[in-house]
Image (cartoon, rainbow, N blue to C red; front, side, top):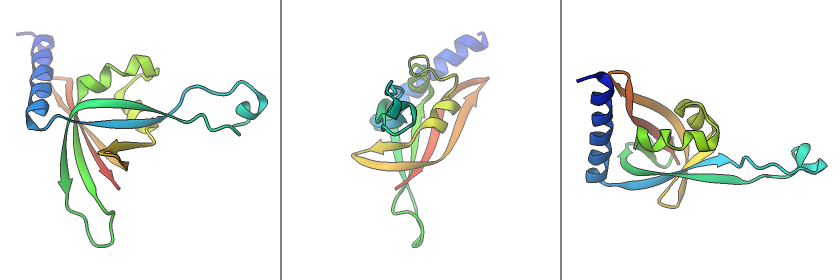
Length: 135
């Protein structure tokens, strides 16, 4: 088996596993790409808003928090394929660009701040992004 075939099979298996384990969804909030063409928009005086990028299937795992820390800390496992399919539409070159541009993550109606992102790879193919987010 070539590494491309093995990688594609691994991506399909990862998606099936996430669906079986919970299959939730999250939204990544990104700054809207539309900008006002008038002078106020060009000066940044108009808030262009946000756009939501829905990612599914996702598995959420609650992590312990300390008394002085955030209210909630959740580890989200996202399928790499669901992220990568969004990149061309958003004009992003990589998943790292997408996560760096994200203003936050919405899960079950609550807004979370992205604290860390780890890419899980096998044979050079990303199959999961593990995102730790806090509320």
